[in-house]
Image 1 (spheres, rainbow, N blue to C red):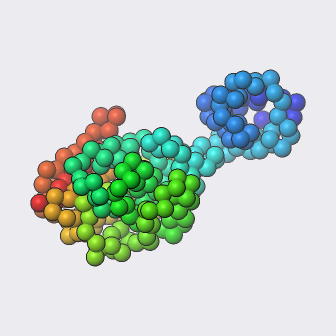
Image 2: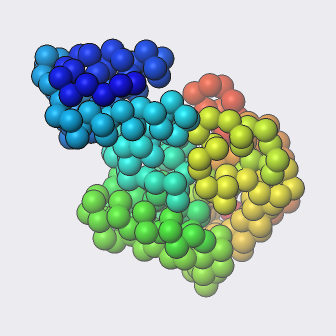
Image 3: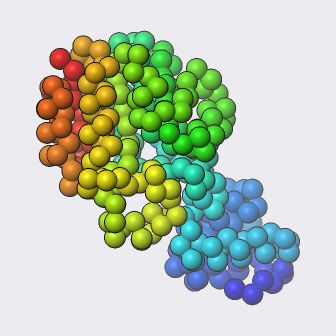
Length: 278
């Protein structure tokens, strides 16, 4: 796309949309460049972009055309009605993960429940739970210091200083604690899965996506650790692949959990399994 500084907002969007096959993505990228929202673009279609903005927009469009996720290009993704900063050090929050939050919030927990989010990444699960339940005591762990830097930035933006963020291999750093709820969206894609070479997954951190044993290795470890530190009546809730529901439910059963339930996402696919400590 040849830059022409005289082009209007409307012309920029038309050219970019034809290149991306997506008017929406073109609007999101241009709004980011201009520091405006999409509504502003609709009201200012005849406004001309300055040369610097035109060049920056072209660069973003080209990067998106090469497959780079929009969330990384604009540096954020909405989750549960809030914007979370993201970069290539963390997984991009998905709509299906909102199911994990929904089910966690619906559980019969104490008003001052102790909760830990394992593998927090951007912090979207832990910080959302803390925002929705101000009396909960929320911790979040991640093995990646880079991910924790992103989570801390989101924590500061959302004003949720009460959430504790810890570097830890799963629950290793909090095995002396007892929890009413343990939640996690762990890496669950099998190593070598062809989907890892497609779409947004190509750009996301492999440490947050895949693991050994057909994607179940970390879920096995996490289930064993969680069953040892859940309070009586406490809950474990784990997001997993659509073909892993039965295996995860079996792991929960072997760990002694009861009231085991696997829930479908909006696409009707098994996406989340919960179990309760006796």
